[in-house]
Length: 360
Image 1 (cartoon, rainbow, N blue to C red):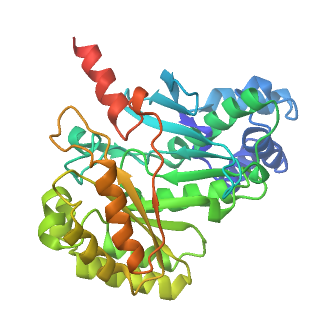
Image 2: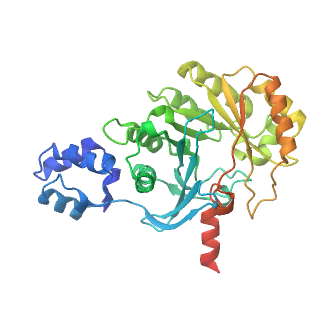
Image 3: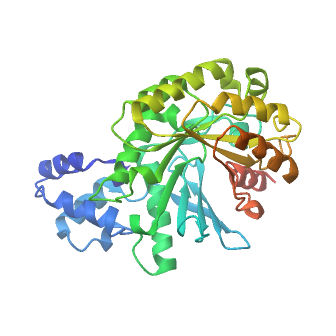
């Protein structure tokens, strides 16, 4: 049976109508699952018994089953491993940030969009697992719903936009390779009569699927775009990001320029620093020249080492020196705060660990 979270509200109304259930009951159901965050059909008290019986006969509730949940020692990060109906596994990460003088207290949910990934970035644990399938809209949306339930229990109050909840498509998979479902999930998050998460609190990350970046620019959604660039030249980037051979840096930067022109929104560039690979001063100089003409922000990210990768994180002095060069070009940058290292919070790491344990 299909999960109720796969259904658009309009589809539920049509389904209810054909079953002899009043159309307005779909609005009550929507309120119950997306606002009240009911955990099962029996918790929904606004629907008549015949509607509940119909739902239980024809639908399952959440498409996710929790397998493992880990909390970091500093309690700032939770990592979830979910099992899907076909026994595939995906990950979600919750990160808590306290007020720091620059930004308000906030919570960020890092969600997956695919089971595995076909793009094979060499330093990424998910890329090392290969690609299994696309996630459905319900499987994407349910990750946020389940974590919102946890946060409500933890904080003792409903969580809405005022609490600064952010969603980042930076978990397992390439979101723009699952384009239609990613966009529909964003609309579901943004629904004012549902989860009501502001579009500007949502970030879609891509390793650089140029045609899809251009397509996203035409959408009527004001999400943030993050582009995983990881190198300033084709020779270096192709060694770690194979898709660069299809969409080289020149084409990627041109697509980003068009995105900025169309949306009038900055692009966030992600740069994973790999010791001896892309962290030299000449690399920083090239990157500064490349990004200087763009309305952008650069996030510098120390790599999370994986068991199947020889890449190691750059030393802190190298990271700081790299950032100093970038600042010289007038490009705002941030060194990404590390969270969840002790619980394998990097993309794909908990799944790899779990599969390894299961095989022993």
